Image 1 (cartoon, one colour):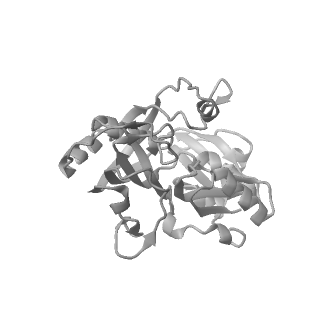
Image 2 (cartoon, rainbow, N blue to C red; image 1 turned 60 degrees about the vertical axis):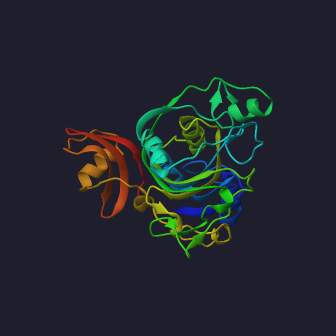
Image 3 (tube, rainbow, N blue to C red; image 1 turned 90 degrees about the vertical axis):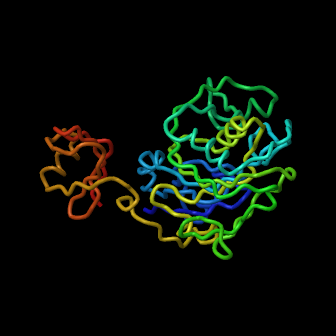
Length: 310
């Protein structure tokens, strides 16, 4: 215990947040369920002490974002870290044209990750090679983009909204206001509300949306508004990490529940494959306590991870 959603500030790495959580909670056992770039802000889910067991089940959660995509300027990092290394004039854009392009990115697809990423090839981090002036052959990965909703097209990123209604993350007069990275210039900017599957790089999406519109592009701002069942409106600040209650492992796992009897619970703890009609991933509880995470094939249950009795 517990699982805590924290609001990551600008210019901190995910590891920086983990380090602060270790100090605030007095433990070295802190993990997170999905990296957030230094120039991105928003929901970073931390798992503390025994709750690090649930990290593997939360890494594949859907994630939601507000993304500012600036057109007409590309960068090596694909975001506002810069520097601008490619520019082009942006033709007049209608919202209808942009929506048409965005619709082409929905669904399962292949995406090439950024060179400046933590992916490894042959034990070498891509960003380390990129910073040394080289590049790695990063194969395209299978991703899913569930929704891309255009919230506006602006002449400059400076003109785009920063304040949003946390109920639906639409621009508003009052609500949550976000700090974006320092702009690299005055470039036409798209504001997009995105929902994506695990492994999706919004920086790569910005690059690819620009390419589809015939211009270089970069991600000039990014806020993660949701990870699985965790909304940014419920996230705690770094300063509140030490006292944050968080939630239990059971509450953190977003799977259907099988309520077991003593026999089923015992068999699962023994690593057996008891007969059961459940299909797909489930959590198993006994008297409201978490017993195991299992996969069912409609005939029997296979243990993925078991929890010791408290």
